[in-house]
Amino acid sequence: MPHRLPSGLITGSVKAEIHPTYIDCTMTCACGAVYHARSTKAQVRLGICASCHPFFTGTQKLVDTAGRVEKFRRRFDAAAAAPKAKKRA
Ligand SMILES: [Zn+2]
Image 1 (cartoon, rainbow, N blue to C red):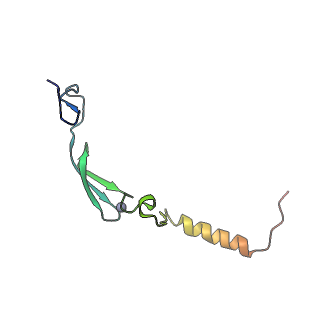
Image 2 (tube, protein in one colour):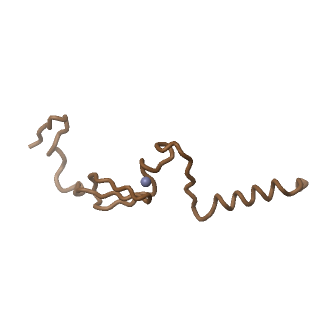
Image 3 (tube, rainbow, N blue to C red):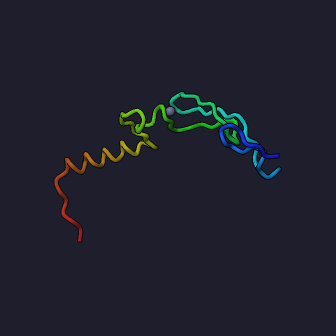
């Protein structure tokens, strides 16, 4: 029988046996922060969270994948240092 919680949430109103189990979840970020929440998974590993995301910290942070930033910088520096090459026809 569904009933309304003080928060307004209605419980017991979902169809039986079609929903995954909603359990306590430990979320661990790459920065070391640990969050406890509820999810259908017991463990979630995050790449970035509110403690380390640049939007919240206000500091720039490069999330580099396989040295792509370094590769770009090398190419950019090489292009700036080299004399301008003629455009190919
Ligand atoms: Zn984090």
